[in-house]
Image (cartoon, rainbow, N blue to C red):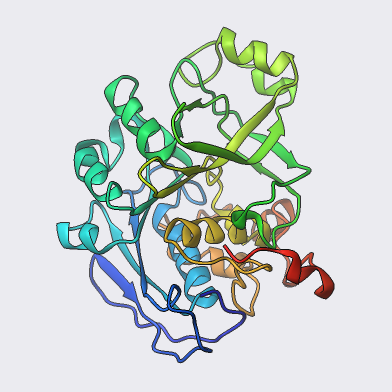
Length: 338
């Protein structure tokens, strides 16, 4: 069950596994929502540099958002691949790591397939949507609904303008927005199940300025961009087995987790894949906004001496004000409870 603005207490455990639980009493819930949802978050090892591909720190921000938005979600966050017991207990598995041959799930795809076949959800963030072409890539199409395929997909940095959003539980409470990120696009999607584009934008011409290469460009994507085709950069997947998956190609810049719309959309998606009902206003994210100070915490790399905190906050629009919901009170009853 979703909740709005409830304070919470966390206990940080000094171990590889970091678990947070809520012991708060919520308002009466339905039988369908009374079941505790176990959310397993998997952080890959340190990757790029300070402020980029901050897998653990990014998941900590999302963990906070989930615990402050749901009475029935319990989050376990681990570095590296989880134990068999943790996989077996998960209602959804969130992976944020480097992709390709370094993907943390590369040697665990059969285990994932088995667990997802039982209805467990799957969420992959940023580089985690990339799998090696061939059998691993086909597996990701089957389990995630799509993936970044080298020599077909591309990974430019650009400001994606999401001018409209589909009517879907994942977009509830999310306003149209624009962010500067390494938005992957021209992805390879499955032809099975139901893939719903959640975030789509027309890529500007400058995304094709690099020469052809495994991640930079190819004739297929150049034709698509030249035609002005909308590019899907986040999607929901209703799998044939009845489970749910979500892919999100943003997440290169750690600072974008301070954007309420980005954070709410991904929090909604994680809870949706776990089988939670998403209310008309979406996830509450708690009472306090996420500013630059909070985003400096938990990162894998030390803060560089030349890091400009004020300029970074300005560039990524990190304000001290929490955005209000776009919904008018009279509109809230028009959303189905799913």
